[in-house]
Length: 365
Image (cartoon, rainbow, N blue to C red):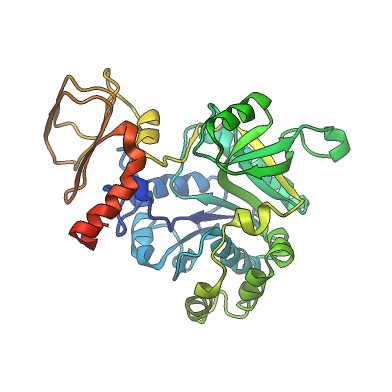
């Protein structure tokens, strides 16, 4: 394995759309949401062990989840669990990791990936990541793994790339120059994107060298660059935690897309069909999970279903349940909260969760 390849797994999110299973104290990335005995974080970590050894994999999470990360990833180095004292979006957390890893290895090449996505075609994914690492090691380039769209989805941001003369650009055939990042579109616009054939979904999976990223921060987001550059004498020492706890909350609250990628002129994408889902909703989980003959996705054995179809049913492992007469519903019992909700209206769940907290207390958040 290449000693210059590193991975940053971002695992600080709350996953509020998976309420009530995903809660503030135990969010989505730590849940065995697929019912296979491993959390999404564990699956992501194991996938990247095929890219680099465990001492070159970092997990950035909120300080509230430090023990959960250590418990679920017993092989991770303690110093490789990076704790953010505040949620300031993706640009500061990526900058923190880049400056810290860059101090360890100035030639570092870094993959940045969410902790809670599903990738069914793992071999293809690993091949694309390796191609991207090979390119970013030799070029001043910011790469994103673009997901080949399968439908005109309005829930994802899109990336438009250019299909110009490969020889003129001196690019490998699979690497495309990015023209623009597009916000989540309305349906008609999404249909246009799919028809044009030169758009991919933005999955938030990035590949770049620490040096290229630092240059980009200096040029396009100097406040972030100045802040994390000032920590170079503290990273990888016993003073690092105090520095981060003091300075990190003062960093701009901004995504990496807005801070750098939408401004930079050296952004590239690798379109990829990797069997990807961000598992952002119960419906998206239902779409990719194993189902019975009536299209029900059920995570327990002690269940009696009658006249029930197209449902996702997620219950405690020792729970028995009898359900009749439901079609296209979400049924989730986390022990404290029972949710029975039409799958077609699941966009309301985030607000419903807030209402429950307001009416009945923060223990249900």
